[in-house]
View (tube, rainbow, N blue to C red):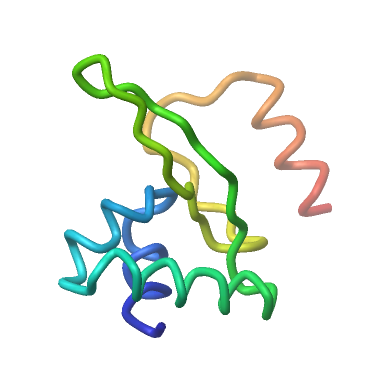
Length: 89
């Protein structure tokens, strides 16, 4: 399960099939691990249906609970910079 958490921390939101391919775990083991992590409140899971080559692919979309990734580099809007300065005051 630590491999799943580490992968999600490094890559952000991912499908269970993508986690399985990247970590080398079977899809069944990833789904069991994700279910356990969800029960402990460490990750959030949503059911996701995507279409690949006209076929329906049912999966679980996973991300770390309460984790807000750092802001992307580059210019920020005035609203973002004003809100950021208010929260640090």
